[in-house]
Length: 249
Image 1 (cartoon, rainbow, N blue to C red):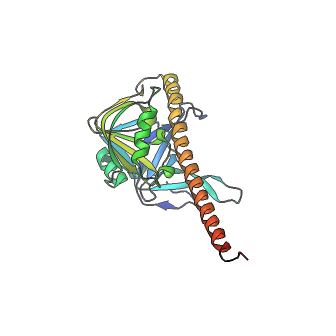
Image 2 (image 1 turned 180 degrees about the horizontal axis):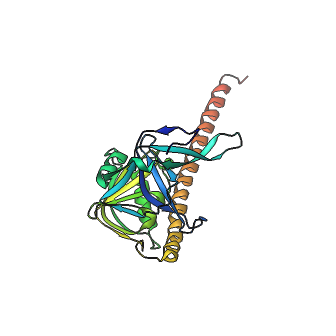
Image 3 (image 1 turned 60 degrees about the vertical axis):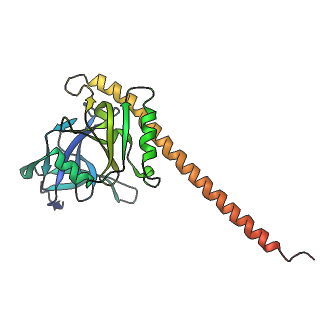
């Protein structure tokens, strides 16, 4: 979508499953999202199209315009949204998008029995967290933003719309900061019914998992800082002790 003063980039952008924010002022509480392949990042889309899941195919756009949503105190852009040129629309298979977005890499293979509405769902997230590289954990986005690819249904969705995942899963990178969970089959929330309030109630329950993930990251960072501080103190004490040698009269 060419707009005066805006740069249009002829690189693919893909309409990916919407993200639901229960406190959003939008009536549906859902944000349409665009994945920009060149940047390996997601942005809010100007398209007013809520898409909890894509089956068989997803929609791509060859041209898009990145628009500034907000700036920091210095006037530097910090948040963007994307407007697409609908005349450059194309369709690709879901599995092809997954291949491109993950580069066919994997972090781990796990056996998961995950019910996102269950009180003990934390156990599954412990397994996922511990399967990731230590330096990677703090950079990953919150769980409800992760994508989920169900092979049997040939469907792409987002974890905020999922109720259950069970069986063997492959944990893959999604772009620069995300995770894609690949599995055989899933149980979706009530995405095909008008029960938005039920979905919102369930999403509020799932927010606990985001909080739990943040606590895991915070605990790791605290332990790392404490370990570094202890090492610094030990080195300092050793240096001071070495300086005392030979000073006794």
